[in-house]
Image 1 (cartoon, rainbow, N blue to C red):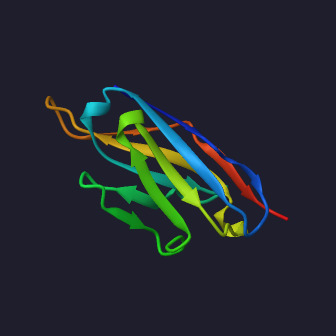
Image 2: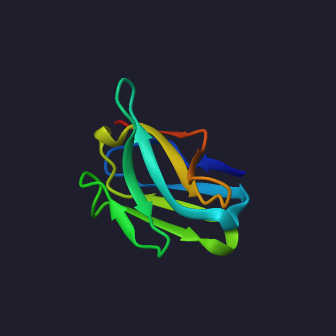
Length: 120
């Protein structure tokens, strides 16, 4: 079992910055990949950024050159640094972890989400 807790969301003006954090606990040694997703009201959840098992980062085109994903293995924490925020970035942001299970297929775990609102 893996538990994920996001924090760092809030209200920010366009052009501002936020840093989201996701703290993983439980069987963190079983985590294969991690990433950030977001979902705006009435829309499907979409991938924002992800780290593979080799810490290679992938980004959605809409956030490239503005967002940076990283993780601190010692603290079991993943971050999303968001710069030059735009109103269209407004969404609930979710932390995701793909967890390896020796007894079955990989399984996804999700945090509760943290609200990011970009508005003047």
